[in-house]
Image (cartoon, rainbow, N blue to C red; front, top):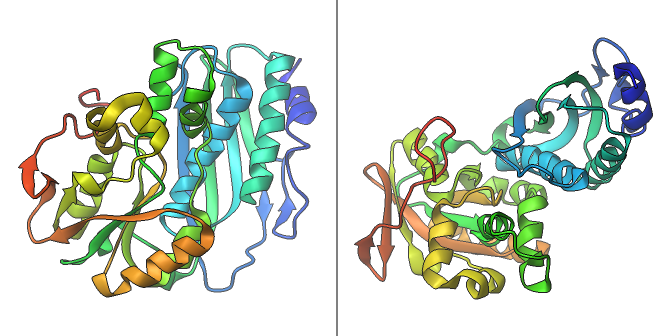
Length: 322
């Protein structure tokens, strides 16, 4: 099967017929029609590499869910509304079974996230998947890393550490069972908090999605904003499934530095807390206050008011391992 037949057979059907897509898959470029007057275009790109981001032999449908979910999470971090994405696939072989499973799951995930495939590229080589996502955000609602203010409360969505625990069940080659199914879903199928970010945007000062670990990503907010941050370990949102699997201490370590939860870390003034909690509750999303921004630098960890340490700060592809 040639490259163009591969695209026609497996990915032409993924593209959606939409008023914001004048020309999609099949030409040298996509032609896109802006639909939001005065909005800014938000663009981000994510890559998954076999052996670095996922284990060899991972199911193709799981990869599609994870790839698009992780990429769209970057749009959520800035309170942008998803619009389009392009896909670059490097494949060791053009396996019909793999491509059928991948493209079907990709189409389902794209429809769920309301984002349209408008182009891409395919080539032969070690399995590598890249997605570039595009979205729209009103200039006065874009949530940046650099906007945190002294005294802001630090808020996080959902629960943390689940994805790292799900990965651990795979590394340990544990059989698929009810006790680890939730944790594996959190690893394979991240849920971008688009609706939450857009609902909270009027009250937020800064934000980031948690991909490299809470300490590392909160550190980016602190550095960009010229502030320090303090996190109270006992307030970290931990799922019952994670606690049952790992215990409190390991769960806290994974929540701080495990990464790839793709939840949101946000800051807002104390007087806005009730508004944020109300909006999150209306969406059925857990939102927790875990600390505060302060004068200084770096991220400080406290346990019952006392300074503590909790292992590595997070993941860096070209630095120390977790």
